[in-house]
Image (cartoon, rainbow, N blue to C red; front, side, top):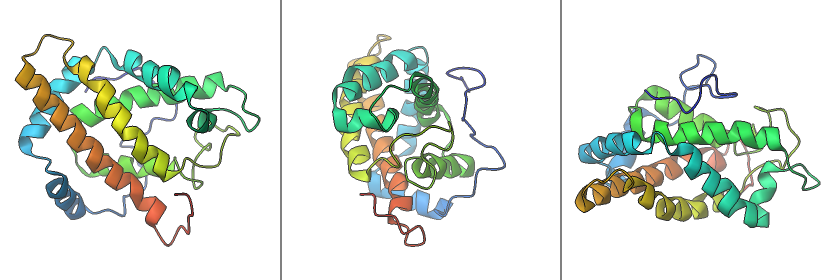
Length: 203
């Protein structure tokens, strides 16, 4: 498994203190069926991971600095409550974002992966946002913005998938696998936002 960086601050994949996801592995398998995620997708995601391994920094920089930074209602979530930049916070979260690309492509979708999907999702809600890096920023990221931004990520990843000279049909299969994974992950991310026990109103 390739790392985006060593000792990534706040990155806790597989750690014992990460709670078990309330979503079961059986639920995950059903979601895979719902989004049409196949064994072929898993194979082509692995190929995509090798293609993207040395491009994660560029991709995340484009998403964060090239796109999100120019959209005020999105950019505010990595700034302080007065709208001022939090460069250390941004740098740490960017590294985790880079690693998330590799985790998406290269890790098996097993219990550890499922648990960490839940952890990532909760860190976007008022339950855990800001706690990992001990900052004062917006209390949560609305679910609607997370869902909406998936389209941007899907569109902008495709040129990077073609960067190593793979045949057009292989790039298409990598892209289809990526899109299927994004749909799967956004379904998982929605869980805490819809969890009655958390009583969140953060759509």
